[in-house]
Length: 150
Ligand code: FES
Image (tube, rainbow, N blue to C red):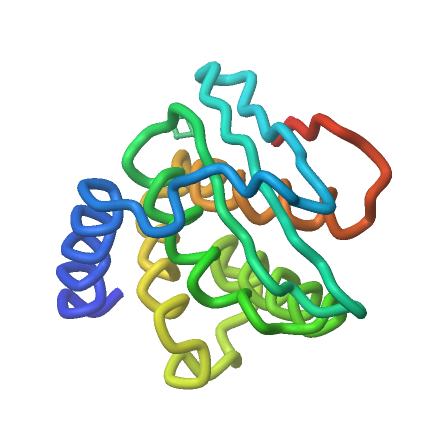
């Protein structure tokens, strides 16, 4: 991995962990889900407000490591305003890049998410980076109130 991406990754994770965006409750959320990583015990609660198939608002709360907090923070920024289908597609792409399954994806097309591709250098942390995303997928599917990374 390029040193530049790794440096940027560390910088962005640090910033979003120290100052998480959308770290709040949505009182009139239409979906709420608890995401859990049993390996470490970290949890996040994700709030979604959907209107006509569009993510009108999204936020999170909880206790997590720096990477899970930063990833959740970035995710809330990038999925607001997307349709459910667009968010689902972004999750699929994000999952592929974080697990290193897709080297063809153009990092420049991913905007802020590209930085999180840096997690590939730390395979043990991929579940941290995807905790919020699995929670989002589950919330969109509306099939559960709790989701686990395992
Ligand atoms: Fe628990 Fe990262 S160490 S989610």
